[in-house]
Amino acid sequence: MITTLTVTLLLLTAQPPVTPYPTGDALTKQAYHLASAKSVPTPKVTVDTTVAPDLAEWGKHAGELMEQWYPVVWNLLGTQDAKPMSAIKVTFQLKQDAPAYATGGGIFVSVPWVRAHPDDFGMMIHEMTHLVQAYPGSRNTPGWLVEGIADYIRWWRYEPEAPRPKITEKNKYTDAYRVTAYFLAYLTHKYDHGLVQKLDKAMKTRAYSDSLFETSTGKKLDDLWAEFVAYQTR
Image 1 (cartoon, rainbow, N blue to C red):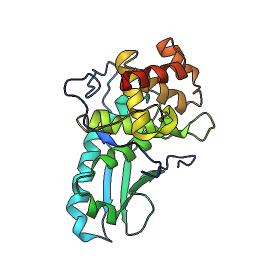
Image 2: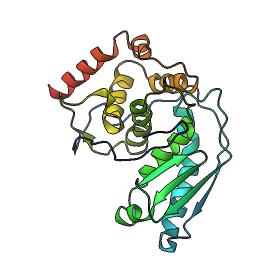
Image 3: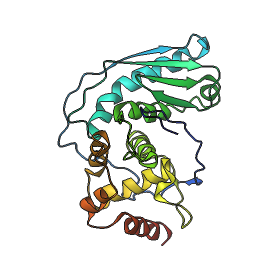
């Protein structure tokens, strides 16, 4: 699901159904001030839609969106000692297994997927987040958390009003994607607004361990998950 760089295959993990979240709940939208926000260079995004000229406008909009959101994502993660990218290339492909995936300095997009889902610009934010993550290969980089952070950026920052997954006792925090993202949103709201940044920085420096959750919240990871499930199923 993820290589030693930052490859993601979207939607290959079964996810629970999504349902609208109650209006007004604090977890529906998170917009905390970025105390350490800094200005970073915006990479030049080039988009190659040669194989699908009809998607040129879609690609142009996606590129502009990525240029706007790259500095935002950069400041939402633990990038203090990292170096921003200077360029990102987006390439459309007629055949690939995932809607989109990121690797190295580029993002590859499925032409059939975009034609069938023309409003899915959020996947570009998810994939661009992987480029900002850029974790070095390490067994201290759990894939469930990598994908959870990318979906947290997408669904709680870029698309904060989107429907939320329905969490049940059958789910686990290692389910990745929206499930893990929802869990991170809960912990970020209740315990530590800088949690995602800390987790990201730890993985960037090969220093991640599950104990980081306890350091930030005072509770062990399994206990936090049980609390979250109880909150969701009350």
